[in-house]
Length: 90
Image (cartoon, rainbow, N blue to C red; front, side):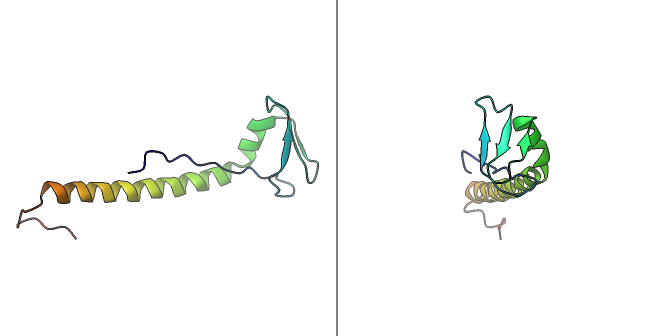
C-alpha cells in the first residue's frame, strides 16, 4: 500500500470558477484575481464554499484506499496459504 495518500484540492471562486487568488499571509482575507470577488471570511469561507469539491476528492481517495487495501489483503492471504491445495484465490 502507498505510504502517503495526501491530495491537494484547488479552490475555485464561486463567481467565476477561477483558481488564482490574492491573499494576506494569514489567509484571513482572500480576493479572486480574475473577477475581484472578496472573501472576507478568508480560507475558512473558501473551504465552506468548495465543500462539494472537497467531498468528491474524499470519495475518490476512499475508493483508491479501498482498492489498495483489498489488493494488499489478497496478496497477503495468497502468500500465507501458498502451497495449500485446498484454498484457492481468484
